[in-house]
Length: 114
Image 1: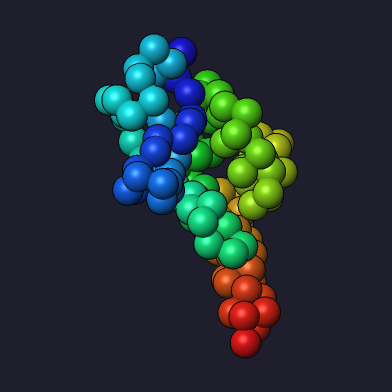
Image 2: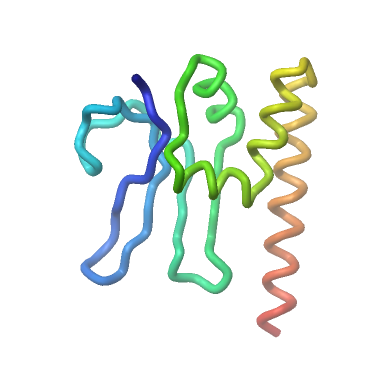
């Protein structure tokens, strides 16, 4: 079974994660099929970057997200958009909506810091 899960990268006591598509039996930091995103919990707020087109492709092929990745996908709204994708909405529309939401999230975070 193929899973979408986190792969730890970064220095000791400074974790960041890649969101990868990986065989269920592979070790956490072992062999993977494809990188579909990045997650850094050390920033305030956490940085989450996801290539939604790749995620939709893998989930439509049967890849299952782990609990932690599902929570990240829910936070970014990817799971809601994937449900709309399954109902027949155009991929380009959903990806454009995701990019607009990410841009809005970045501008909101910059204004909070100032």
